[in-house]
Length: 219
Picture 1 (tube, rainbow, N blue to C red):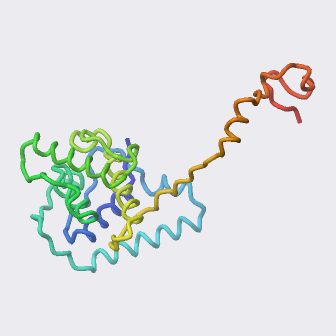
Picture 2 (tube, rainbow, N blue to C red; picture 1 turned 30 degrees about the vertical axis):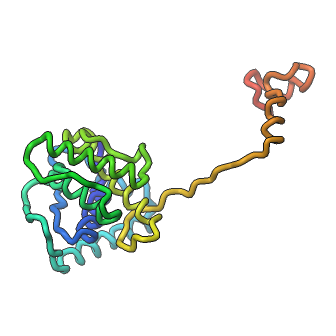
Picture 3 (cartoon, rainbow, N blue to C red; picture 1 turned 180 degrees about the horizontal axis):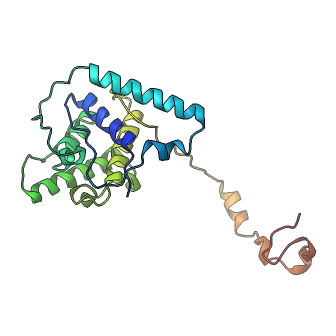
């Protein structure tokens, strides 16, 4: 499992801006990350220069901008995922997007209660309409089994927020692709039952010299 520091920074900044709190964006120790040089291998020179300028601008604005006010206790210890581990911030994040979607969570240092908070958050993601494949598991965060999955879930929450007409807050990432359901007439569906697949047709129905042993047409 690998973490993209830029994605973590985006997720952290979005949560801070949306909730008006300050979180430590520190990377987890002894964890594999995708570094800038590795990412530039997949960019052309122009894209790499643009990415570098954007990173410098973001760093400059972050150092000059005042810290947001917070209703949570500000603590510089631990990394970004330590701040999310008890589930409080994540539940409040969903409630900012859809008020009342997460209920019953509470602050505690007891592992059982923190896990219960994460379960409430995960259920809240489902209620919001986040795709199941984009929802993290409790152990992904609590046991640090897949921290990249935590970031994926945060970006997926933002994608769902973009679809909501009554949400006008900041977002990150892209929107979910629009659903494209195909509906066929009863007549068309009946025709499919009588069609013979190409490879099961009699040999004399086609010129065997035109295809190879796998049924691929020769050029």
